[in-house]
Image 1 (cartoon, rainbow, N blue to C red):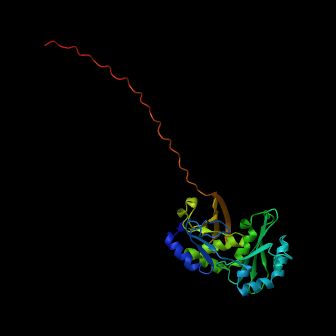
Image 2: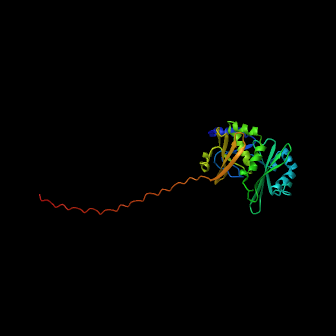
Length: 293
């Protein structure tokens, strides 16, 4: 089994060059979801760019506006009611665009609603720019999954395989540069309602010092590929993604596992107990008798 892995400086250059305009390369930051990643020191991170409705290009905003009814109908099939809310601009449903790396002519949108009890409902939407049906991926219903988490759902696998052309997926896995195949993993994570913040060199941050580097494992015997990367979920945790594909980029299995951020524990060393030396008695003087001359 071969592994494609690169030194830190090469990863930064590859990711910065390939992801330009479609991803954000964070400087040192707290790596906390929804925050600016440039306020604390914890290494270099890469994530996809997200745009609110107001920040979308006029063409994408117009496409979203023209398909809001189709989005509402497709969402209703999965149990989401957005009629009169996001479909009409109500801020209860937060809508953002994910600028995925292999989107092609598709608009990827993430919908998220925080209920009064702080529970979350969420789903993602694929809107073809050239026409065609709107596709929805169910993520959460009031903090609950539909049978399986979206990242492990066979429906998510199938949608990813039909969304991205096989030739494009296969070509990405054949690239020596990390960005194309890492982009496949980020695109799938976004499709299933996630927003990974990937440390390029986890060992630069004490909290992720035990996390794996971005790796593509190549099994030439079984003709399998496994993409491994970490997602800094917050200051207290990170998540490791394992995405197994065939050599053509068809997803076979996805696993994630949460890990607590590493904290170095220094063992306190007690000062050695002092030893009190008891003072000894003053020696008694010795009388020397006088000697007569």
